[in-house]
Length: 131
Image (cartoon, rainbow, N blue to C red):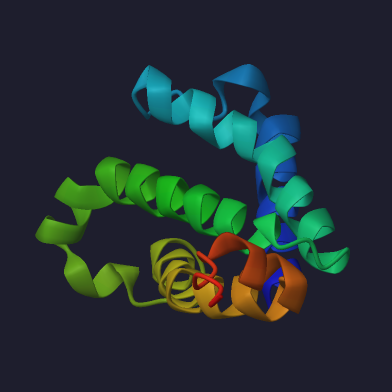
């Protein structure tokens, strides 16, 4: 699910870059524009880390998707407040938000599942030895 979602994000941001060039997100504030362009690199990086079962992958995924969701909501907020039902569709803000919630809820359990047992034990403090 992670890989499909982040590769779909890569494809979407690639499409917008090809279609609109560097001005593809000119409707958004500059920081959000930079974020959306950076997602063209961050999304496939997350997918690669998840495919390779790296424990840092889910944490990066959570950070990236949180930034993406916040960026999208910040741009769409006024329109959502004006016409909320127009955003109940299978593309755009709704699937980005649902995917974001999924990633944020599952990132820590997935990280624990990807972390080798020895690494988990090394992070905690060892009890003092007797005698």
